[in-house]
Length: 116
Image 1 (cartoon, rainbow, N blue to C red):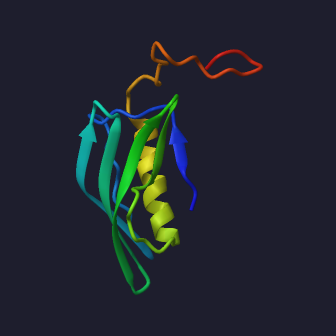
Image 2: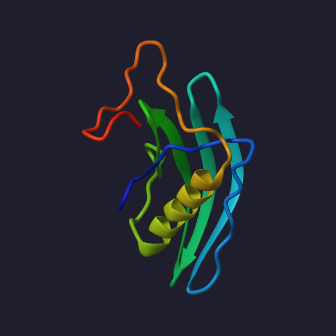
């Protein structure tokens, strides 16, 4: 299971798309808490003879948004679950918000090529 990270996430412009084929992914309810900088979206994944429903968490940690199954979700890590995470990542990365800016108490990420 690969956790995805992005500099971009705008809950207003966030529109993950359904996916169909041998693996089917659909998105249902969404929640966003601006005070905690946490978004959640419910995913339904169908593949082979297995249907799984779980919440995907989009949470701000320092300078990036982390996209992962929410804590406590009982999932079987399959290609379909990874596809759902990848679709959420794609939608978050396409959202139009500006990249996260450091708060007063945070310093920018340091790189040999300068700050980013």
